[in-house]
Length: 106
Ligand code: FES
Image (cartoon, rainbow, N blue to C red; front, top):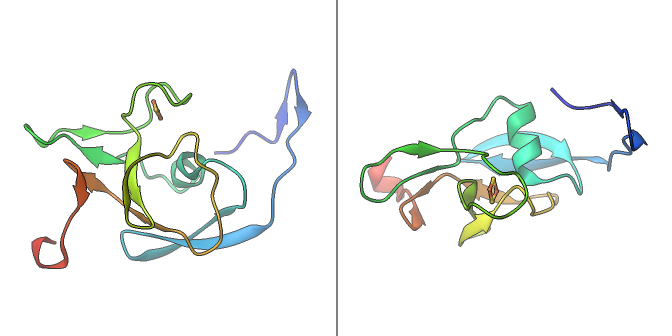
Protein backbone atom coordinates (compact mmCIF):
# COMPACT_ATOMS: atom_id res chain seq x y z
CA UNK A 1 0.00 0.00 0.00
CA UNK A 2 2.95 2.35 -0.50
CA UNK A 3 3.65 4.58 -3.48
CA UNK A 4 6.88 3.35 -5.08
CA UNK A 5 7.15 5.90 -7.87
CA UNK A 6 5.29 9.21 -7.92
CA UNK A 7 4.33 10.78 -11.30
CA UNK A 8 5.68 14.20 -10.23
CA UNK A 9 8.42 13.64 -7.64
CA UNK A 10 9.68 10.37 -9.13
CA UNK A 11 11.12 7.46 -7.16
CA UNK A 12 10.40 7.53 -3.43
CA UNK A 13 13.55 7.07 -1.31
CA UNK A 14 12.85 5.01 1.79
CA UNK A 15 14.68 5.06 5.09
CA UNK A 16 15.88 1.85 6.70
CA UNK A 17 13.31 -0.65 7.95
CA UNK A 18 12.77 -0.13 11.70
CA UNK A 19 10.63 -1.72 14.39
CA UNK A 20 8.10 0.10 16.56
CA UNK A 21 5.16 -0.92 18.72
CA UNK A 22 1.50 -0.17 18.09
CA UNK A 23 -0.76 -0.89 21.07
CA UNK A 24 1.85 -3.37 22.30
CA UNK A 25 2.26 -5.20 18.99
CA UNK A 26 5.59 -5.07 17.17
CA UNK A 27 5.37 -3.53 13.71
CA UNK A 28 7.75 -2.36 10.99
CA UNK A 29 7.97 0.80 8.94
CA UNK A 30 10.52 2.94 7.18
CA UNK A 31 12.49 5.41 9.26
CA UNK A 32 11.48 8.97 8.45
CA UNK A 33 8.12 8.18 6.90
CA UNK A 34 5.06 9.54 8.73
CA UNK A 35 3.89 7.22 11.51
CA UNK A 36 0.46 7.30 9.85
CA UNK A 37 1.95 5.96 6.60
CA UNK A 38 3.53 3.00 8.39
CA UNK A 39 0.24 2.25 10.13
CA UNK A 40 -1.76 2.62 6.91
CA UNK A 41 0.60 0.24 5.11
CA UNK A 42 -0.08 -2.28 7.88
CA UNK A 43 -3.84 -1.85 7.51
CA UNK A 44 -4.41 0.24 10.66
CA UNK A 45 -7.25 2.71 10.02
CA UNK A 46 -8.26 3.86 13.52
CA UNK A 47 -5.89 6.23 15.33
CA UNK A 48 -8.10 7.61 18.05
CA UNK A 49 -11.58 7.53 19.58
CA UNK A 50 -13.49 10.74 20.37
CA UNK A 51 -13.91 11.59 24.04
CA UNK A 52 -17.68 12.17 24.15
CA UNK A 53 -19.10 9.54 21.79
CA UNK A 54 -16.16 7.12 21.47
CA UNK A 55 -16.26 7.45 17.66
CA UNK A 56 -13.23 6.12 15.73
CA UNK A 57 -11.10 8.56 13.75
CA UNK A 58 -8.15 8.11 11.38
CA UNK A 59 -6.26 9.91 8.64
CA UNK A 60 -8.37 12.73 7.18
CA UNK A 61 -6.32 15.70 5.93
CA UNK A 62 -2.86 14.06 6.08
CA UNK A 63 -1.20 17.49 6.31
CA UNK A 64 -1.30 18.17 10.05
CA UNK A 65 -4.40 20.36 10.18
CA UNK A 66 -7.40 18.36 11.36
CA UNK A 67 -6.14 16.35 14.41
CA UNK A 68 -8.06 13.22 13.40
CA UNK A 69 -4.82 11.21 13.31
CA UNK A 70 -3.58 12.13 16.78
CA UNK A 71 -2.20 9.28 18.90
CA UNK A 72 -0.14 8.81 22.03
CA UNK A 73 3.49 8.57 20.87
CA UNK A 74 6.18 7.74 23.40
CA UNK A 75 3.72 8.73 26.13
CA UNK A 76 2.86 12.09 24.56
CA UNK A 77 -0.84 12.47 23.64
CA UNK A 78 -2.15 14.55 20.72
CA UNK A 79 0.77 13.70 18.44
CA UNK A 80 -0.21 14.28 14.80
CA UNK A 81 0.96 11.04 13.25
CA UNK A 82 0.55 12.25 9.67
CA UNK A 83 3.37 14.76 10.13
CA UNK A 84 5.53 12.96 12.73
CA UNK A 85 8.45 10.95 11.39
CA UNK A 86 8.77 7.30 12.40
CA UNK A 87 11.81 6.41 14.50
CA UNK A 88 13.20 3.08 15.69
CA UNK A 89 11.57 1.82 18.89
CA UNK A 90 8.68 4.31 19.03
CA UNK A 91 5.75 3.37 21.25
CA UNK A 92 2.55 4.29 19.40
CA UNK A 93 -0.82 3.90 21.11
CA UNK A 94 -4.42 4.47 20.09
CA UNK A 95 -5.72 7.59 21.83
CA UNK A 96 -9.02 7.52 23.74
CA UNK A 97 -10.13 11.08 24.44
CA UNK A 98 -6.86 12.62 25.53
CA UNK A 99 -4.95 9.54 26.68
CA UNK A 100 -4.07 5.95 25.89
CA UNK A 101 -6.14 3.14 27.31
CA UNK A 102 -4.82 2.08 30.72
CA UNK A 103 -3.66 -1.54 31.01
CA UNK A 104 -6.62 -2.40 33.27
CA UNK A 105 -9.07 -0.81 30.78
CA UNK A 106 -7.95 -2.99 27.85
S1 FES B 1 -4.78 13.56 9.32
FE1 FES B 1 -5.32 15.61 9.77
S2 FES B 1 -3.78 16.21 11.22
FE2 FES B 1 -3.18 14.24 10.61
